[in-house]
Length: 85
Image 1 (cartoon, helix red, strand yellow):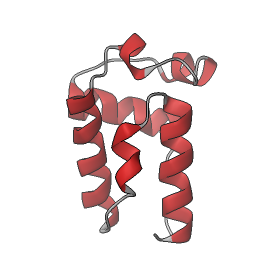
Image 2 (tube, one colour; image 1 turned 60 degrees about the vertical axis):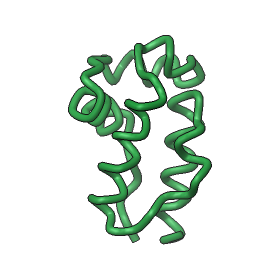
Image 3 (cartoon, rainbow, N blue to C red; image 1 turned 30 degrees about the vertical axis):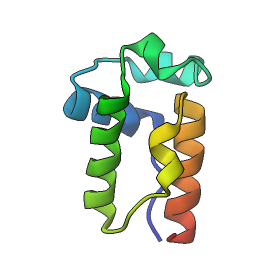
Image 4 (cartoon, rainbow, N blue to C red; image 1 turned 135 degrees about the vertical axis):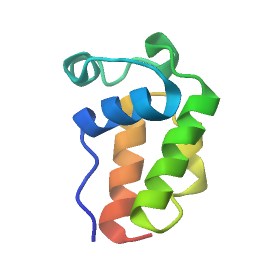
């Protein structure tokens, strides 16, 4: 079982994988704002998903790359990490 993905880690992944800089406090304050509001597009999200899959050694659910907000992304990723699915 893996540790849950935090807002801070998501912010770091957004910068590293997609070149999008977002303060973790802003993500935490507006978790239901669309990724597009932060400047993250679908290709950037795919880069984040690929990094997480490589890091954890298993694929994430297919729906994860369709998430539109940080809240839904974190919930789906963390549910997957906690169940090992």
